[in-house]
Length: 238
Image (cartoon, rainbow, N blue to C red; front, side, top):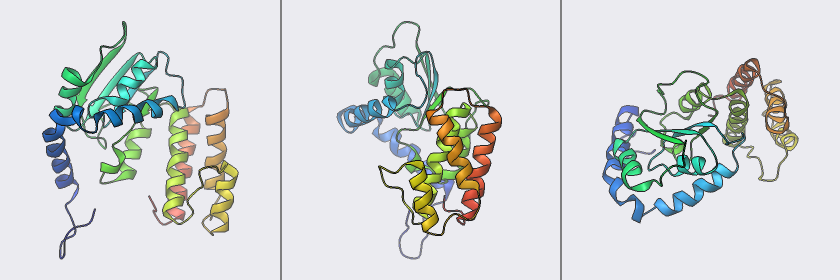
């Protein structure tokens, strides 16, 4: 966010208040504006979920009018908690924007800030953050809130995705077709690998993404620790 001449832009509180006011005002017109596009993008996102959705409990973070959450329900989720800063967007999702959930499924709205989520650890099988991360004043704070309330497998995969973003921010953006080994090689050739953290996180990612065993809580903690060390190595790129 860039301010005008002689000004550095608003702080987190100002940004949060501005976003809430903006989305409150836009809620009623959403269905005739960007709503259909977001609905299609949400279906594509949900189709790539790293955990099975059948019977899952899902957090739709920055839910807006509920596109991602409703896509998750359609894909078999048992319960979706839709969290958004704007009660107006959630009301629109409830009153106008949402199809009726199938029998036995539940959609529950809650007004909440993405960096101060009111949930206990391990409350959800999957967290969807479809269209909200660009609004966070602190991506690191949002990432911390996300990974503290999801299961170890999804959290490890989220940590690896954060590592790729950090490497991209430091000038070693992974190519779309890169394997995890190629991501490491690219970062190493750029002089960005200064410890074993990237390799450790990549190893955990392989097990979480492609393995079939349950991932342990200790492995989630190890992944978050490796991500923290890597970001320190990069000078806080995230």
